[in-house]
Length: 188
Length: 188
DNA sequence: TTAATAATTGACACATGTGTCACTTTGGAG
DNA sequence: CTCCAAAGTGACACATGTGTCAATTATTAA
Image 1: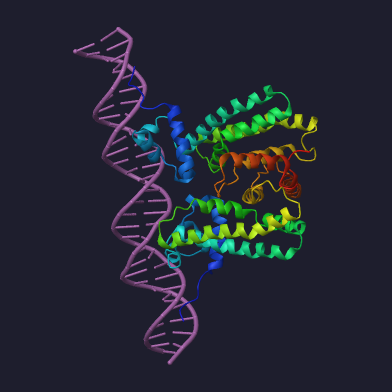
Image 2 (image 1 turned 120 degrees about the vertical axis):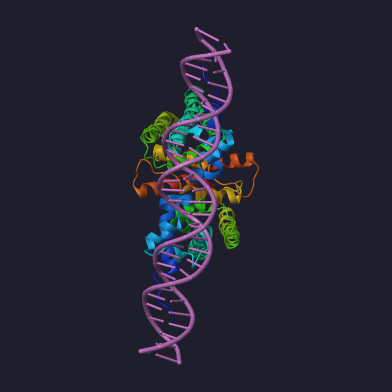
């Protein structure tokens, strides 16, 4: 029994994402979020004790979505196909990298938030180790430079989506240039 | 006449930088800065009307420092020497990129801050155009991939310093890997 | 020593965010 | 229809940041 909810947790997460990208971690408030959800601020406290707990929980949700996609990489055949797939899902969610940076700003003190953050950090490690297979495959197939540390290769790939497009190149040209640079660098 | 100042603008900028990198844009306050400078908060208002004006002024100062170094690139001879020099000064000040991202968060309303921000954005454009010669030289010498847009190459170079070093590789190895990846990509 | 001047201080009034909680609303079970 | 539990509300007390300004302090020219 009990009355119907005015919003689902999924809806809450969606607005959280939009707001976080709009205003950043520090300026994100329960007041703002409540306004977007058309509920009283107090309502949100029924679900999350505070901002840090909410944001860390949101990021776990977000990372899970991404991991589901990421895990499919193993079914994609050889290195070339896996590489193409990885770039595809990264550019499908260019905001993930930014959200991760925002989440890194969280300095949790609340117990649940600390637990969430620890869990979230483990997920990042998991992501890297999950992709180690992909890197290893690339090196085995002689496609990746074996002298580069695996983690640096991964960091490089994920960082590349953050390259600014100040001069308003068409998105397709932008993506294509990045993939070319990640693959072969800037030199001839 | 008049009494001696308790701090110079340069000192103020130094503490501003440290604080901005420590706590980020939103959490940066005059209270915090005043504490670091061992003065009353009110004192800072004699020099800057508010946080946005201070941060934008600081970034102009910071960019000027960097530009002084950057402009020397033309005296460095051929493309290879210029490239080495550019990477050297970028890694000498890895924080510049982060500070630029922080400054991008400023949403100035105050008149002086808006003017500063406009000026700051012009400086970035200047930096890019100043480096266009460098890119052009590289392409002329047949060292840079001519199919890549100049601005993308520059964005790629500057973005690369932000690659995280989560797994604590020694700094030298980290820098060396980045330069290798920027130059030749991750593939063999 | 004193007057002029500039730097500094700290209290004040205001604004915004936080976490809590007694109270209200809603909807289904009986 | 009545009652209960879950969901939602909004006011309260508190905390922290902002911008201002009259008063205080330090320095030096005369």
